[in-house]
Image: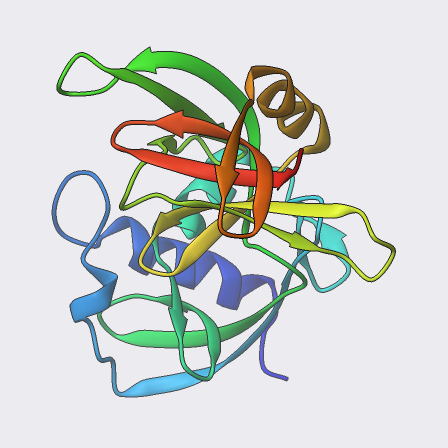
Length: 188
């Protein structure tokens, strides 16, 4: 496994120099150099490099903007380098939800992730709930380009409190509406 502190800093410099404002177009980049870097995104959203938590919030936010999910896994990507990392579950955690208005003036749910992304749930940002092996719900929010946020338990409880019951082909379900979409959270 290649890596080291200087590799992390060099990668950060390359990511900072990525062109444009907002999110860099990582989906368009096909760098020639590919490798691995010892970074693990834990289930709770902590980023670990060579066994130590990356405590610089700005660095985690920067890396989150150059994260890409490819068929062979998760990578940090710059125009010149693509480094595979390990993601235990989802790369982000949704840590807050607020009622908001969508572009059409309808009710929407706006989420905040642990890396500062604001995401309004809707057709392009779906909420889905899986069932973990222990039977507990595992709710996720699509953030961008196949990257998801695990919805933190307290946030999921807020969603359940907002939920309304609907009859569905699968039977009565509790769910929430946001934008032009309705998302089932589980059986009523």
